[in-house]
Image (tube, rainbow, N blue to C red; front, side):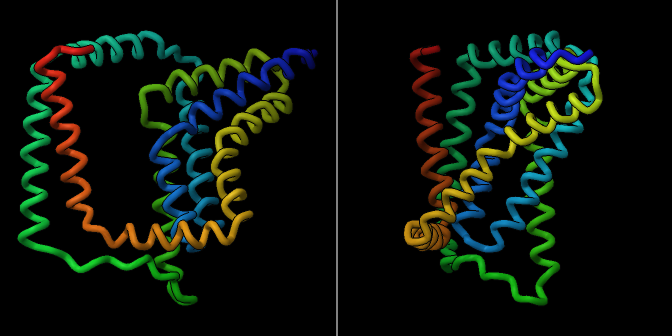
Length: 239
């Protein structure tokens, strides 16, 4: 018989695992972009959330019964070796500075016209909106599958659900809690965003102006900063 205590004890763990799996800057960035544009927010965030839940479910099923501890340990060992190599810092710094210079020259020699905000799709432009939703769905699915921590989280989720109960109904409920925790922050962001219409209009206006910036200049500045930091790390050997 399923222990109610075990089921309730597993809930905080599954909520934490769901929040951890969804903690991806790409997902939060795409959510912020969708909210700031203010175009078909509900349908687009629904597609993103559906993709996240699909990717998470596929990953949990794939790693069920598989312990990724050895794989994670090997990847971490190789990652540590890369971080400790000062030559890599030097090469990365030089490459980034060269590319940053190329972007700067490109932006000066071939200026582009400012890009306006994304227009709202017309009633007949269902194909364009469908393409946007599909892109967000794919982004949500891949972001919950690809990553250094996704395998352990998926493995722990499956083991937690399985160990808490052998009853299919209870297992489904527990997994539903995990999925709810996965998408809850993004739903909460959208809800909070909709509660302050005056503020959201100001943010949307600022975002529209930001979209008019030449992304090449921004990319050049970012790469230049990271390149200089990489050269500093290569010089002083700080870890």
